[in-house]
Length: 80
Image (cartoon, rainbow, N blue to C red; front, side):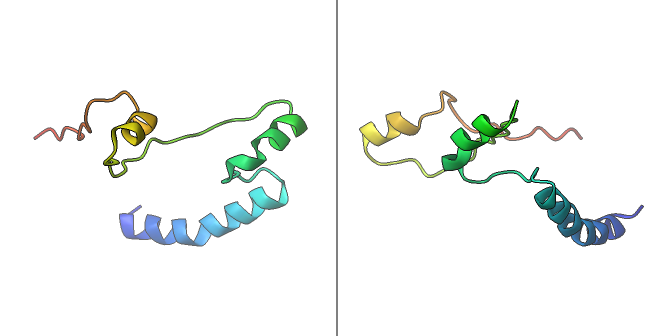
C-alpha cells in the first residue's frame, strides 16, 4: 500500500477507532487528575508516558525539579 493511501486511511479510520473506544469506556484518559478514580474502578490500568523535550528553566531550583537524569538529547542515528 502506498504511503499516500495509508495516510488517507489513517485519517478515515482514526475517528472511528476513537469513537468505538469511547463508547466502550476504554479511551485513553489525558488528564492525570482522574487517575485515582480509574485505578479504583478497574482491576488493572496501563500507563503510557512519553518524555518530551522542553525549554530549560533559568533558575537552578526549577531546573532540579524537572531534570530527568539524562545528560542530553541523543538524535536517532541514520545509517547510510
